Length: 134
Image (tube, rainbow, N blue to C red; front, side, top):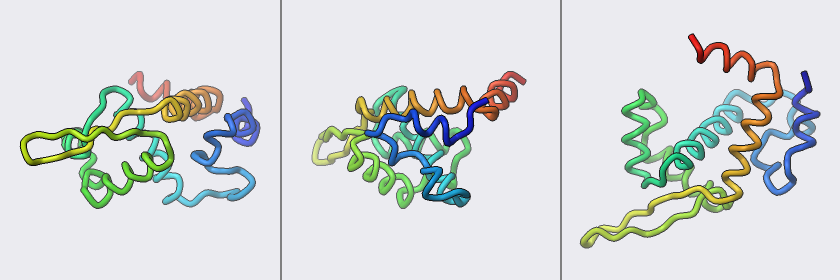
């Protein structure tokens, strides 16, 4: 089973900043790890279907992620993902209202693909596969 350091060295350089650097922080804080997991989860959801921030909050609430499904958490996260080039926004107009619909970019898809690879190659990937079967 490869170590995270070995797997990290194989991550494409264009997206390394998205993943915790094993050199920079030997023990990432729980908050840092939670932010990375939340970011990847949001990317994965939007990969399934483009959606607005409101639709994303509604979906998260339906699936019992109420703490995460607040405007003060969702909109800054979507903005950061857009600035990082992982999402793109398209402005939708409905009457006088405007909203942004987010879709995943090629770079965002690469983050999802790399996350899958990391999880599948490490021991906790086997744990996640096993636990999800039950």
